Length: 274
Image (tube, rainbow, N blue to C red; front, top):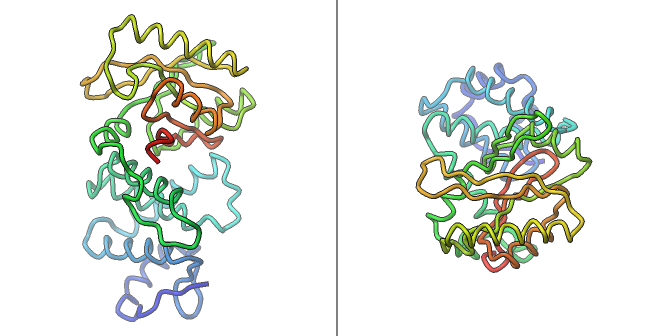
């Protein structure tokens, strides 16, 4: 266990926070943390409150919503994920208050994930170690809407990078799979092709997925700013990260969207960009 030190100057704030959140891990010496990042998230929350970004009532509500969303997505709530919910609430509230955009948050998550994968065990994670896709490209991917076409009288489902989607989690559960990949064959490595060429490539992608023994639902990637044309896509049920790598390599895609059983869409870059 780790405790935040030198908290005397923050005692009034801590008293208010503890009153708002009676379940906050505390002992006689103050807040209790299991890892340094938890203390950092806690300190950031205190700093934002001190600057007037939000009230403790707003914070308590945001944290409650984050916990309920996680439980609805399958979190067993054994107590060891409390600060994961705390961080989720902090990101959401910071975005709602205009401190940071959803796109920036999503891009930073991707950058951390890429850096963590490339960092040898035991060494500090350094951002930018493997990031090679242009920032504008990442921003476009993070801002896009990934729509799964409805079927059997079900409505369409819109996904956003980094935003847990309960409808997607339910869809995966209904099909008995623990993951899926949202992928297109359009515009290899961002090079815009003629419509007929993209259609032919997408047809080959559909055939390839069938050869893998996987079932896919139709979808499309949509630019909310309407700068680029929507791209026909497939939501490949049961696809794994290895499946994603194979499809990205064969159909020359910068990235795909990987979704876990909790319904969390994450951008998975091409192996060459990690």
